[in-house]
Image 1 (tube, rainbow, N blue to C red):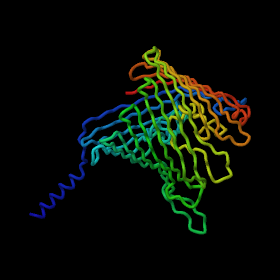
Image 2 (tube, one colour):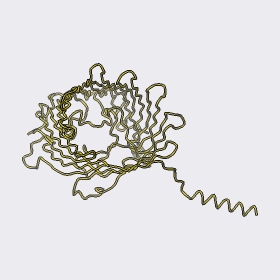
Image 3 (cartoon, one colour):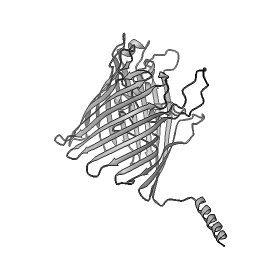
Image 4 (tube, one colour):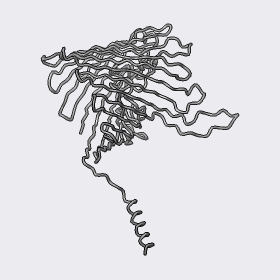
Length: 437
């Protein structure tokens, strides 16, 4: 009898283990957004071509759908799918649905204030000056990669919000590149570096000043090639540390300022990294005036290197910044300054003037001017890259639908005129409509 009872209990246990356990769901949200762009660009290589066509125009759609589920015991699950493609581009992958977000968030894990976010997620430190866009993938079905909405990567993130002071501590590790190891040929044959992963580690501390509308932030991030060999070409170990501050001055209503400074050290392909970058910005929103005018002034600096013969690289090595077009100009960012190789947020200084008005509740107008110059021009190079003007119009059709129109024009400077034969100015027009649901 005991043997039969044991067999029955074993069968029940096996059946129970085979039945999936469903968590108690407290709340489920389903939503997403669709953005459609009409793009026209001309002379993005800054070359006046008398044979080939200098302009291009196309339509693009970005579609995202997400599901978030709040479970019991402070557990949240988020999944978001994405498709980006240019219209009438029927190639492999053009209609693929890709995984954009897929993470589990455990709040108040073990102790109050401690949370863990595990899986595919977005990690943005501060304003994304150093870390913001960790997704290097550009769909082959998209011609304008700068318009991509992908920012995520696979990562483990832990946040701890202190109860006694307004301080949040963050630590994370993100997988940038995964390379599986393969067998190298035995000596004396020359092998290849195998299993060369690339990982990003970071810690961040954010302090909200209790006596003012201000925050102070400090961070340290390290980008490394794991299991690097003696081949110096594969050497990558760059450490970046920095601090950021932002303050809305109560004594002067409407006035705010912010700034950030970061330095680097480490080694890249045998070179010693010693770059730095930073910005300082001031904004003022006029009070009690129709159309709500705002003005702003920002200075960006990215160090450069003018001696390629030594073993020190003093140029800033941009990691994974987000919204680069807002710092150096949308045309400069999208084109990479064409054949010149400049414009990648390194060896540059940028002065940005901005202004905006709100004529009605639904209409917004903004104007940005960028002056881009080289910091360390090489021998024979000129310093002035050029000036860019971006005019942006927005119309809120409803609470969920918004139309946009952007006109940008880049006037090339002496550096481009000197480096590019038959150079030409660049321009773009982008119209958009976006709906969130």
